[in-house]
Image (cartoon, rainbow, N blue to C red):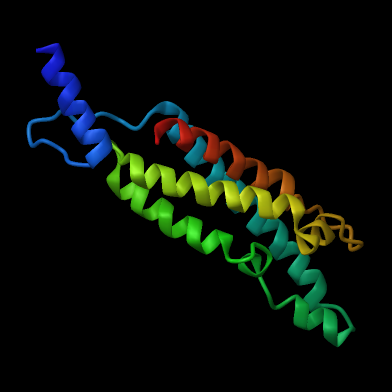
Length: 155
């Protein structure tokens, strides 16, 4: 029986097939926490960027007003959009999950974390002279890194 259960678990985790009589297992707590952490980080950074955008849009400088029109997606080098799509797929596969989807999302989360830590525009926003606290690299980049680690363990 143990050998059969192990084989079924392998088929479900590697091939993504779910036997009709398999119990629904919740996603590992580490993934649940990492997803919640990432969602909270996105909300916090969106709020911060929104505050910076208001400062820029209210500037007498026309160029700063134009820059203020762009939001978070402009600062993430399209890594956010790709990761969000992968996370939608992964969340739809929960509670059981799919290792292939977790691996793809882990790869994209790692790319996002790396991008946010090294991008010049992100660094400029984090160090903005408008006295608006922005912490994209630390907050969202850190959460993306933690998400990457949690998902790699599930892949």
